[in-house]
Image (cartoon, rainbow, N blue to C red):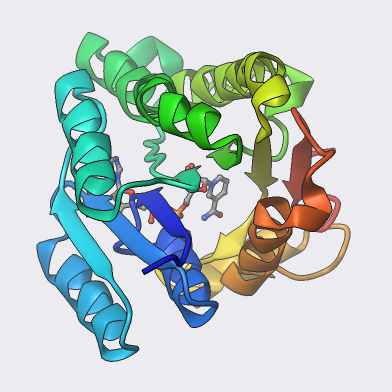
Length: 244
Ligand SMILES: NC(=O)c1ccc[n+]([C@@H]2O[C@H](COP(=O)([O-])OP(=O)(O)OC[C@H]3O[C@@H](n4cnc5c(N)ncnc54)[C@H](OP(=O)(O)O)[C@@H]3O)[C@@H](O)[C@H]2O)c1
């Protein structure tokens, strides 16, 4: 088998799942991981297998550096390569900074920033060896503005950190034919937000509508393509003009 291999963290639901399905439609082998979404992960994997492709769904908490490295090693062992690493997992909680717990604070960095480092350093050697690779990281649309975020502070700082990590990895891996870029969604309807909340968000989006997972999928597909080979260290806003 010689089809390309993608590893998507948090690929059981939301944007990651949409990416998994899109890449499978293009013939990629797709490995996803999740923490607690066992049923959605199995359903996603079954859908991919029904398409006649290789698929893997692993329960792996990528905030654990050893677990992250093990997952990368398993995919490389079974499919002998990882061409694209998509660091999609990125949970958040809203809490006023002055009421944030130490656990809540650390959790945001552990799940949004640190996995990008753990997964990238594990996947990069294979990509370098094959002299081709794509790493796509998820930030958020206004993370490059470094504005005050009283109710989303740790998540926001972690997402700003993702941008610096993205540029740093891009610079380190460019000479090996590997690109590293970030995509920064604003408001994307993943099906889990109530309609009333979506309507309230719309007022603040210059484009006048909330984005869809397809908007993210098409941007990531482009970054994974050979057409994007010279785009490295970029931060692509996917926000209809919000947060820029
Ligand atoms: N949707 C938006 O409007 C929006 C806006 C700005 C930025 N983003 C970013 O875009 C990315 C995708 O967003 P989304 O809304 O599709 O995400 P999501 O639904 O909140 O999360 C996707 C999956 O990530 C998994 N995950 C979280 N932490 C993990 C960990 N430590 N190890 C393994 N899996 C983990 C979760 O799995 P379990 O369910 O098993 O825990 C979840 O199913 C995220 O990085 C998010 O921060 C999204």
